[in-house]
Each structure stands twice: as structure tokens, then as C-alpha cells.
Amino acid sequence: MRALLLRDLQLALRAGGGFGLGLAFFLIVVVLVPFSVGPAAALLARIAPGVLWLGALLACLLSLDRLLAVDWEDGALDLLATSPLPLEGVVAIKAVAHWITTGLPLVLVAPVLGVLLNLPVAGYGPLVVSLALGTPALSMIGAFGAALTVGIKRGGLLLSLLVLPLYVPTLIFGAEAARRGAEGLETGTPLLLLAGITGCVLALMPFAAAAVLRVNLR
Amino acid sequence: MDVTVTDLTVARGGLAILAGVNFTLSPGAALVLRGPNGSGKTTLLRTVAGLQPLMAGEISGAEDRIAYAAHADGLKAALSVTENLGFWASVFAGPSIDAALDAFDLRALASRRAGHLSAGQKRRLGLARLMVTGRPVWVLDEPTVSLDAASVAMFATAVRAHLAAGGMALIATHIDLGLEADVLDVTPFRALAMDVQGADEAFL
Image (tube, rainbow over all chains, first blue to last red; front, side, top):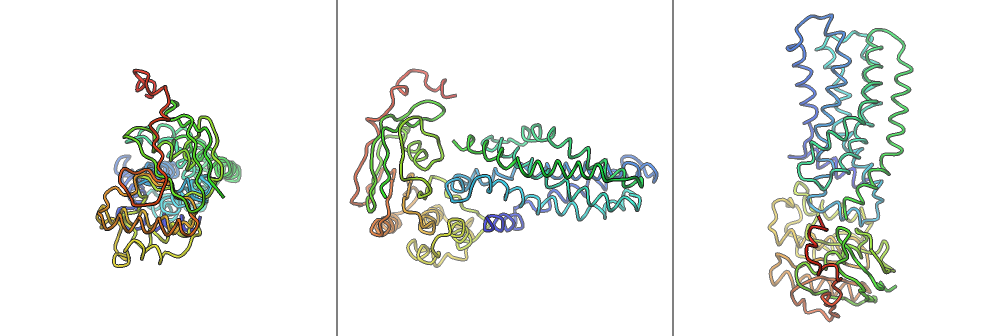
């Protein structure tokens, strides 16, 4: 398991691994928003939590189609399926590696980009906490979507269509927590609900993903 | 412990391809599968390896003992030869990679990235992976594709050493490896469904 995680991180960081793709996308979206909606500071401050959350979600989505497709194409997935590792563990580790290379950098860079959007001071804490709680769910749901579409050439569109509805609850509660934080309101309830969603996803999705992967490997 | 296959029916896309396959692999023995393209050798191997569910029959003694090698080697172009082998060695908790590097003459290429290897060198690396799994049953699908004569001999030596150590091998191949192995022609086991006209429509 540890070997698989280390290998995936190593592959992501080497040339052609795609590390930084989501990060660059996130940066571009957030930098372009003030140009498109205008420089009004009050408006930017109001939409900042929502824009940051949506940007992070789309950045996460962007890198999902390579999550399992690469291992499928070069045959490594077949070999992993016949290895002593349980397929549930393989999928979970792949999601963890995806989170470390995509979700975690987004969480860390979000406060910096918050400055660009004039995010109120009170909003930084809740924004980072909500992203840190929510992005693991995005990676794990994404791994399930990737398992569903693994044998399909150019499955990226189908993957997005399948995964986006599943992302909605995470987006609603994550952005809600960030918004309430920015307005100086109590954030406990949306954060707890967000943590609950993430907990459920992390507990159930590896089994669902491994089940569909077994069917797709036939 | 033997690997025993009894009255096995294997299917692809829900359609039976081979039916009533029987064979036994004992420690130290190899079995070579033969048959024309599309006769179901790969499907049979994937079923024995547990990648596909079987339609009928029984496979015993194969659970968690198989090292499978197919047409794709599962190599990562961005990782070096040592890193690729080392990864599989730690996944399978197998023996060290030194013996495998020597057996397939990869020592000189050890630090080279897999993406920079030739097709035959990649294949040798893919076969060297079998040795680091430490698993007793090798299930090999066309292992000699893109290998030159010297590499085929290298591979045959590795298989012989594996058998001598009490291992087993199930190999689908068209060439003569020079192994003292039984040969199983899969053609007589062809399931009747394959003769039906328009089987491709049902398959799709």
C-alpha cells in the first residue's frame, strides 16, 4: 500500500505526471474573475467564497480522468488486481495520492487567492477548514467516477457528467461554511454536515469503486 | 499444492468461448497452451488468474498464488528499471530484485528510465517482474512477443529455474521454448456458441 502511494506521488511529480495542472487552473480561474465581474470590492468580497470553492472543485475535476486511465492503458491495473493488495485499498490509495497532489495544494493556495478576491479577514479560517474537509470527498468520489469509466476511450466527458451531481452536496455545504465565515456568522453546522458527507464518502466509495472496477476489468 | 482446473467454461462478453477444459499443474511442471488466434487462450488465462469470473466448473489452488503477465507489461515510463521492479517487489513483498536483474540481463540498464527502453528490453523488464513476485504459479500470455532469440533463451532459462524450484507455469505461446512441458491445444474445447453466425452481434 505504502509502495503504491509513494509510486503514485513520484509519478505525479515527475515530468508528464500532471502535478500542477489543477493548481494552475485554479489560479487562472480566480485571477480572471475580477476581470470578468469588475473591480467592485464589495461585490468581489461577497462572491469570493463561492468562486474559490467552485474553482477548487473544477480544478479537482480536471485531473480525474487520468486517475485510473493511465494504469489501465499500460496494464498495471490488471497486475494490481492480481496482486496481494485488495482492490478497495488500491482505489483508496489512488484517491489519497490524487488528493495529496491536487486537493492539498488547492487548500494551501486558497488563502493567497482569497486576497485577490478581497475575501473578508474572518473568512480565511472557515475557507481553509471547509476546503480541507471537503476536497478529500472530491478525490474519493472522483476515483469512483474514474473506476466507472476506466475502459472508455476519451471517457472524460462521461466522467464529468457522472461525478458533478455527486459533487453537489459537498459544494453546497463547503461553500456555505465559507460564506458564513466571511460574513462573520456561525459555521459549525455546515462544517459538521460537510465532515459527515466526507466521512460517508471515504467509508463507502472505495467499496463501490472496487466493485465497478472488477466489472470493468473483465 | 497442485493447481487443478475441472470442467471449466470460460466466457467473454457473456458468451462461452471454451467449455469442459480440464488440466492439472503440479509443482515443477509447465503447461503450454496452443491454439489459433481468437481461440480463447487469453480468456482462459485471465479466468485462471481471477480477472474474469468463470461460467462453470472449478479452479482450485490458484487463489493468491498467481503471477500474471499479459501483453501489456504495466511499466511506468517515468520510473527507472530498478524503481519499476522495486515497486512490484514491495507490492508482492517478494524477494530482492537482484536475481531478476541478473536473470534478464538488465543490470546495465538498471538506472535507465523504462520509457527509454526498446520494446524487447521492456518485455524483459516485464518478465523480470515475475521473479520478484515470489509467487509459485506463473500465468503467461505470449511472453516472447518482441524478444530476440537470445532473450527467448534467457526467458526459457528463467522458467526452467522457476520450475526447478518447485514453481509452476501456464504459458500461451506459438513458439517452441525448448521446455519439457505438456502441450494443451484449446481448439477441441471451443464452445458451440462460437459457431453460431452473428456471434459478434451478441458479443456487442
